[in-house]
Length: 486
Image (tube, rainbow, N blue to C red; front, side, top):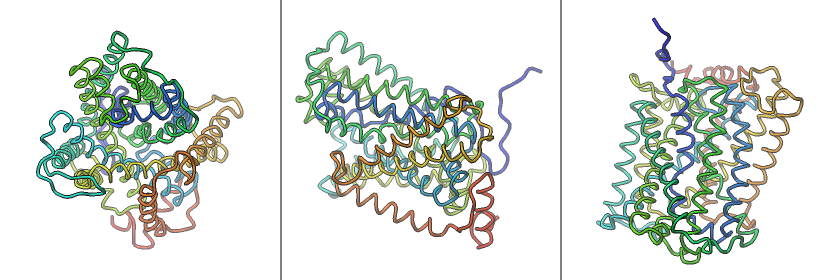
């Protein structure tokens, strides 16, 4: 009989390997292409100018590429579900591993909750009648029953799809991302024949505007790290998993630059300032209903791919944290048939289902508050890359960044640390791109909640390959953790 590529059935407590190269790439790329580009492109253009906005994403994309290089090596060396959770646990021990994991899982859940609000908002652009049956007002944002139920119903459908298995979720991801690529190509064609280069003025505003664009980069690029989160479900050699991380970051950078350049030639930035869905309205001015409907369809596609990917990433990370005893063991349960982290998915899906009832403004604050947490995680992963290079030089690294030359990989690691540290500094109050007070309050509350779990972790667990076993052993001695309940 001929050789097959069918992966073996998963053992009890293990995830099912069912993702190939294409599905893996589309999960990472699709996670980064959400909805925000439709609403905020005009803000980028007014703040920084056409080339200034594009430059912001070039710089931001370069920073994310540095972080992506770090992730690429680490995921090839430790292809386990939970991604950075495993790298930080091995290099730093459980406390810093929890901080890094808590930061990124907060970002994932925040963005997923935002998508539950953005879906009805996008549909309302086409069908304003969904603004019916008023309920209440949250932070000056009116909430309507029909509008909110659209987000809730979508949350239920996507959660159920993900519980059925990552293969089903990845099939949705692949088909929708392909449509996004077609939409981007169509926008290039429209602006090539109908756009006006003079609309792209001003090309550059000032450095403060450039910083304002740069500070949102973590929100728009978070998602490539979903690939490491699902590493135990990828049926691809570890070296190639790392390469897929880099390809997804590069493609997302190109996508955002295309959106900026095509939108800027459709209308002058000043005329788009008050548009609700700026990119869609700009394409409407350029090509009528066809242009706006195309972009709206692309926005719904981006919402679906991003939301779907973050359900995958957040659930795998919470499952990995629970498997290590950092979160309640309830999150470590796998579905008996589909081998998916069903309880973690139900929890995240419930948060998403409730989110629309808090209105649009609250969700905007929630997403803004998650950006610093995401950058904290990227900074810690960049540092642990250097720590593991020094302390475990003989670790098997199928994809070794910088080659075998002395100092090659270290230079990339140092650059990633400096870049993410500088990016994190942009969120300090008083900086030109600092956040409003409400996101800072939400940021503080999220980390206070994390402190509750952090102080419960035992001390004396040394970093290294056995860190997870040591942590589980100490938790079992206390009568807590997966071992204590097995």
